[in-house]
Image 1 (tube, helix red, strand yellow):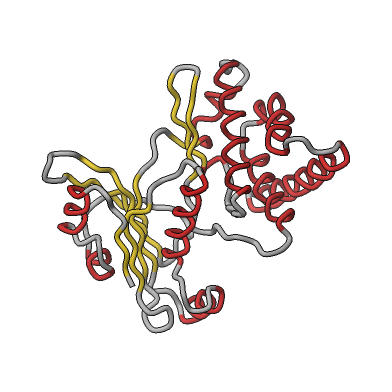
Image 2: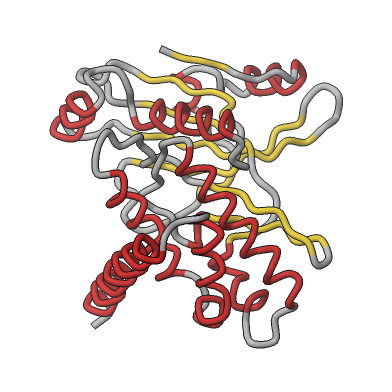
Length: 268
C-alpha cells in the first residue's frame, strides 16, 4: 500500500524522480543526510533536499522503518488489527492533527509492505520552521527573557496542546524537543512534530493527557515553569472548578516528579 498526498505538481514530480513515492524506491534512496540518534534500531531518519523543475528547493524528512523483528511486526499487526505500519500511524496522525487546526508538518507520502511478511514502511514529511524549544528554550525563556515573547509562547503552547487534546489525540512524547518555535520579533508560532506514537484513547483520557502535560512540565526550562506554568495550565483547562484544577495539578506534578526520578536514575 502506498499513498502520495502532494498537491504541488512540481514537488510531486521531484519526489517521484527521487523514487520517494514508493516503498522500494524509498529504501533504495542513498541521498540526503542521515540523522543519528540513540536507540533508533531498524529506523532511519534522513534530511532530504529536492529541487523541482521550477528551480524551487524543498527541505523534507524521510523516515524509514524496518525490517522489524517478527515479534515487533506481530505486535504492530495486533495493535492496529493488521491495518497500519508505524509510518501509516504517523501519516494518519498528521492528517488528523492538521484537520483539527494543529500546526504541524505536512504528510507527503507513505508506503508499507505486508505487516507480517515484510514489515517495512516509510514516511515523507515537510519540515516546519524554527527550532526545538529544547534547544532554544533556555535562551528564549531564561531569567532575562522578553516578557512579550514569553507570553506569546505560553499562550500559543496552551492553545496548541488544548487543540490537539480537544481533537481526542494524545502525543505520548510531548517533550520540549517535539515543539518547534519560529520567532519573529516579540511574536512566535509553535509547531508540533514527531507524531509517530500519537493515538486516540478510548478510555482513561485523563491519564494520557496528564502524561503529555507532565512531559512538558518536566522538559521545559525551569524559569518558564516557575513564572508561566500556572498561566499555561489555566489557559489549557479553561473554566474548570478549583477542585478539578487541583486534581490536574496534583496528577501532573506526580507524573513529572516520576519522570525526573527516572531520568536521574538513568544518569547515575
